[in-house]
Length: 142
Image (tube, rainbow, N blue to C red; front, side, top):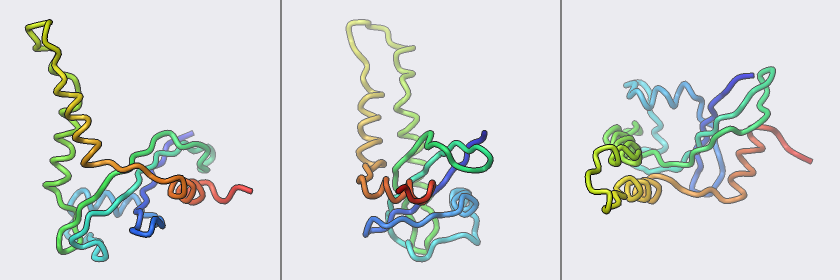
């Protein structure tokens, strides 16, 4: 058993294209030699899928994340936008109750941060996109 991460770019027409994890990591790490010129200046949808493997074969999807990637004019990942996403994700954690003095006041900052995060940085896949991703991972089902 083991886990594997699969990255899929979702095109404007809802078709999917697998992005090798090594390229995704190089984009995240701002490797100067790594860019996706096709997506220069664009905001694209992607799916990050974690699968459980047995004998190196996927048997189950354990986690999925449907989010956006923003590219600069050269096709490199926009780091500032990615950092803002991470910061907002951190704000969703409920650390505020540790410092709360007045128990009559409910601190809902983390709930508002979560709503902002999901409204701005996440998207909901259609059944067709989910089916295409499943087929790409597991093969066709008859």
